[in-house]
Image (cartoon, rainbow, N blue to C red; front, side, top):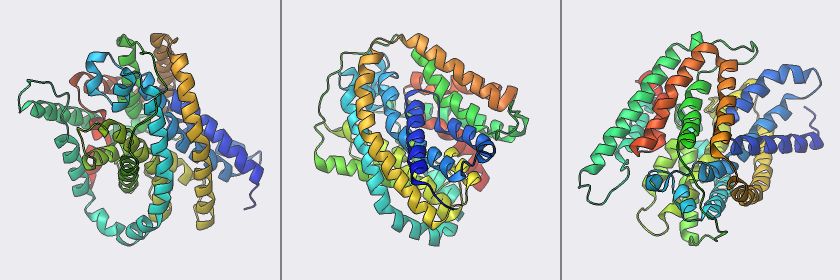
Length: 427
């Protein structure tokens, strides 16, 4: 395959710009872009566009997205002040007027994860190439262990005077959220054949309505119902010591790299592992967790590609599309690693720059109108790609996706929609 360097660079930039869009628009996921590009691959091939360039676009989009998506998460997702303790530490910093600091920490976490992941690549490849079959036999028990970790580490919103057993209430809420989303996932996967895409060439997948409802539309509706005001933001510098910074990057990257090998386990679960590993209740715990969370997301995106190459298994929608477009080999993997590094070098300063500009812009935005437009577009995508059945799944998923916000537990428990079906499959 003769590769054109200018076209490789052009593909990187195209994916990079798409990553900015998907990262900035809540509810619009990289999987949506991957599905669309996969669908038009045959058409593009008629114009001599090599599948390699489409793969580069998808990969660059995925990496950029893991950098940029912190911005709307921190700024658009800011809740009312009395529920700030129930959401990500980034929101807490934003409520203190330190949103730019949270964005800068996230960008450092993602950039650090690229370097750390490349260092972890060879030992991880050796371990899973030689022992994946053995580890696969224990997949169900590993997943059960992760589920227990998710539930048992849930402490909810600790209220002074709530009593020593108040954490049990939030653990029970976590179980409820997990089971409701898990049962919906079981139903959706069992009836997946009922989906009917308006565009016949597009691969139909139940993940689109399921995850869009649980993690996308639910957040948009909460934003519409909340009377959010953005405090004045200062361009504060982070005061995280180097040791804490490196520890956050290492634990996040390691967690993200580990879960990428197992089915049904997302980077959301990797953040739970990182949270358990990191010390809590100190002056740097929030900042360190932001670094770790972003590191886990970026590392997971990179190792999903490595897992496809080593064990031939797709662990994300974007990587699944890549698998259907091209056959990976060593030379191609080297090129794709270069693409990842270049994309990261572009994405790091871009995240900080856009974050600063977004702080100024979002202060003037009508959140209700913005959320309405995005929700309408998401609804249209679901109908086009999954039909009436997908719309039903989407509608059921939305109220379940809103539960963690009102019950003050982590949204990662919603991963039961995938974890429960996959765990039962391996049992």
